[in-house]
Length: 419
Image 1 (tube, rainbow, N blue to C red):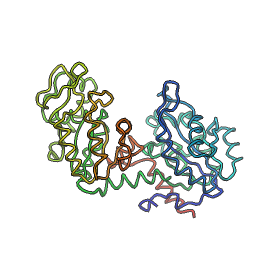
Image 2: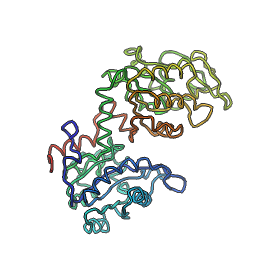
Image 3: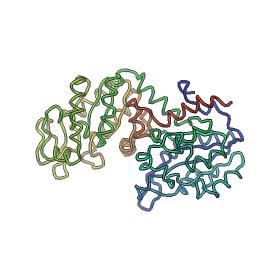
Image 4: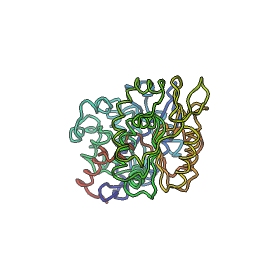
């Protein structure tokens, strides 16, 4: 068990049983809706292999984007093909989720068979809009169509979808109401590693927070400073700009106009509060690179121009941050340092990512842009742990309750171990 609250695959018997496995293989796709990155698919392989090797009848549920993201929303046929190739065994795709065809296929399964059902978000109650607007409690989600039809055919439920750990949707929190439920190997690993960063990191522990998702960063800053998870926070990206704005540092008309148009100035009061209480632990850039007609031009933080926007941190800041990384024992990164997709402004992100990858510290990286940057600069192998989660990762490190964790805890309490 994980902290004696959640069952794992070590705590349940699956041989010859029908197992519902919820994974997160939501993958980026190209213009023709072909998968262009298999990272999340690969991360769920250990759990699928283990259940297959134990001769479970394995029914896999997953989503691919949301209907409101039409450009990424698609069926899971290609996912099944990729899984079959990676596992060297047949993963049968079923063009149905909980209709008569899917139910017939599940009833006909033999030990060791693997079925991948279609995109669960064809059901309205599985969409993000429904989750946010209707807010069904788990006991009501257990009465939705997909759970009501599939649960009677299953002996147990396994969740390996840590990237969706913050989502309160039927296939994530409904099944644990009705079935003995456990965490898959990826889910278990994510909880263990992130729990260590949150509760007992080796010191000194630094958080490097940047990127454009200000809400994600400010979810964490107050929490990790107040509970002592982070000894220092190194700010980059728009996080750094908000912090400097809170300090009264002029950012230049162009950069401040951008922040205003994006409604990001609303985070200034939160930045002011954090600086008031923890100014010695929040590190801001001392110089930046601005976009001068597509070229990199470095400027001190106190002398930013009105007509050019900030696009990266400067070399003095890079040197200082790399030194702090070298002195650390634990490093958490979320969000790139600048517009890393453009060569002139990739320097900050690349140098910091390389410093983390080459450091002796235990390093954790999360978030889509952070992972994409790690791949771009070829440093994935040097990062100790790359989380599959984005929003769920932020919420976990912010100390928020997570819907799927609570559902698995409740199931463990209700059903206990099933050896």
